[in-house]
Length: 159
Image (cartoon, rainbow, N blue to C red; front, side, top):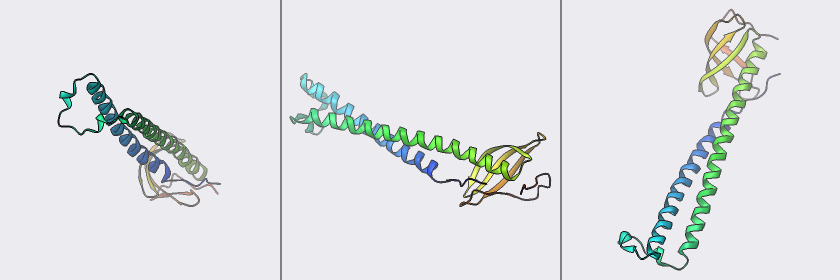
């Protein structure tokens, strides 16, 4: 009757996605700086880069810059992919929260999640009468079954 909720994966995917995106951006910035430095050395304007390391003078430096650029692109793609996957997962989770809650409490028409505290959701709920309620809904982590916390006589459980 109820669908189980995955409360961790969407947030984890977004977090890891941000880590990869930030790392990819940093690697890309370094690769672009090295590419600019190599171009200056090839044009004889190496004075702008005096005091920097001498890796750019090696013969395989252009290849290293290409590899670094490719690694940055891969890290950025993984980051964006993780963020997108997490966002889609969050939308799906919100739909499951609403459908599970409506299945148990037919008087509820809409559930708008506000804040999670473990498996307890603080949400704005709209009833079929149009009444707006702020509720705390606990979800069983294995089954996804909701249970409204507190006394709300206007809401009854369907069996």
